[in-house]
Amino acid sequence: MGYISEEARLDIVKRYSPERYEHVKNVVELADHLARLHGADSEKVYAAALVHDIAKDMKEEDMAAILEAAGIFIEKQYHTGNILHGPCAAVIAKKEYNIEDEEILNAIYYHSFGRAGMGLTEKIVFIADAAEKGRTYKNVTKIRKLMYNKLDEAVELSLEGTVYHVLSKGEVLYPVTAAALEYFQEQRIKD
Ligand SMILES: [Fe+2]
Ligand SMILES: [Fe+2]
Image (cartoon, rainbow, N blue to C red; front, side):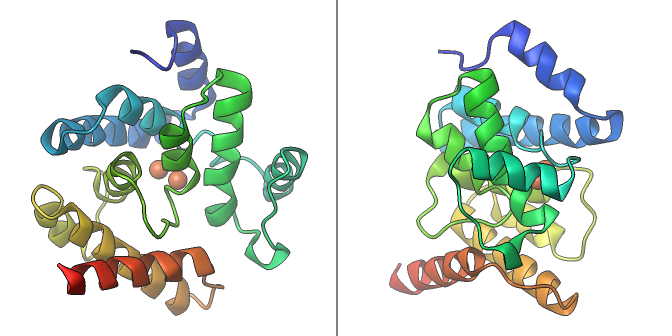
């Protein structure tokens, strides 16, 4: 079952800048590969991957306004583009493209900062975003090696990178990310 009509797909593609769309295409491609490999719902993964960065180039105050209108509260100290663009994209996905599926909406909402207890669709979009072929940061090779057989460990490593990156830049760490990292560390110790 498709979650995005052809008309909506064309509209979404049009909204991205060419550079941003390159990244989105790469995410869609890797997410599709990972979905097949890990037995996820490819249609859900596709919808989330296609829409995930739709708000990325919006102004922070516009994102904050969209979230407020949708009744989503994020404390002011966490109003950075990085934190707001996923939740804002989830609101747009629901309101403008009629996506109601919780797994898709969560995968969009949490794609940049993660969540404790992420589901399979979320983990795949999260990792595809972090490890698509255009990414070049230090740990990406390690994440790419892990993502085929040890998806949870790939997510953990990526979250660790996010925490390190945020703290080393002196930015405020979103507690949702800290909780997600803790969750995946605990899961690994249990297994
Ligand atoms: Fe993003
Ligand atoms: Fe992205």
